[in-house]
Length: 165
Image (tube, rainbow, N blue to C red; front, side, top):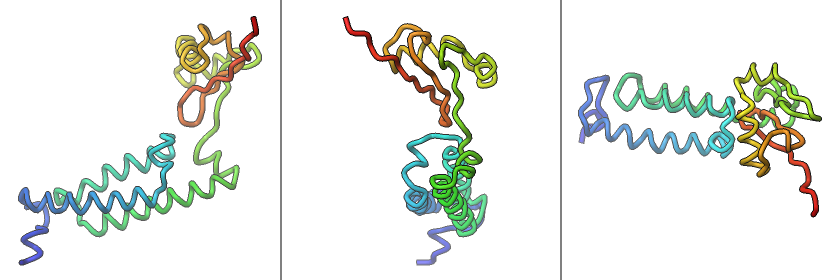
């Protein structure tokens, strides 16, 4: 059987050809996700979201023939390798970690509320109260020791020890 009949050429593809391409892209993407490491989908930081969003956008193009297949696979592989190398480097070099991942911000600490950081990151008192309720089972943010905005965008809470009765 003619490979061009199965694979197609350019943008003039039928449903079977697109399905064959989707099948191949699925396994190429699976291999790239495995290469990128587990953290790409677990941590959901801006650094990790870049690879997820970009791979999704780029790898869809050869399915419907908008871009040539192998150059897209090569470009996607390069992105995954760069992501992986930056991830490994940031695990051992603090300056790279800071550049790639950013830093956390204390919002509530030692009885002080950092209103400037809250406005900058579009957070309200209600957001802090919700974090205190969900993570520390306390009614208000003032009932916990600290609340930080982490590099993932999540709020983390350091609770005061429960008083003994």
